[in-house]
Length: 126
Image (tube, rainbow, N blue to C red; front, side, top):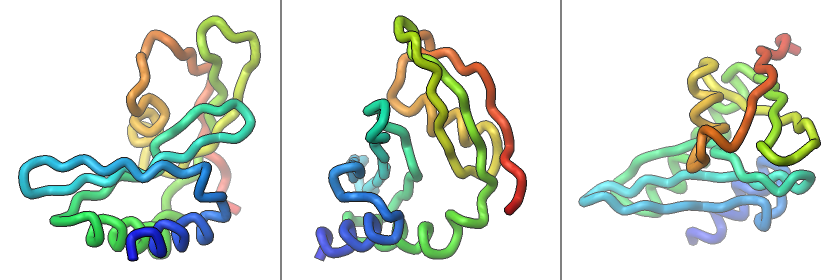
């Protein structure tokens, strides 16, 4: 059943399952699910969203619920960034309630000193 929900999430996001990582962490009686996306162009991974639940199945259900009900209501941001040592300026897009959430998603499991952000902008409402 878990794989079915993971496939449904990928389908709704219009991404192949190979571009998603479902990262489960058990902390005492709580399961944390971090959904990570992998950009096919620059091969970097970014946090999409995190949820906490009592088990893996509930975490997946909460993630699916977030995607269906709340994801599109969050603001859209564009970040232009460079990985230190590279010469290519990259552009990535995030949804979050605020700019702090965008930064958390961008820097998820990253060394802060390995990336330089050139701009973050709130995209107009379409």
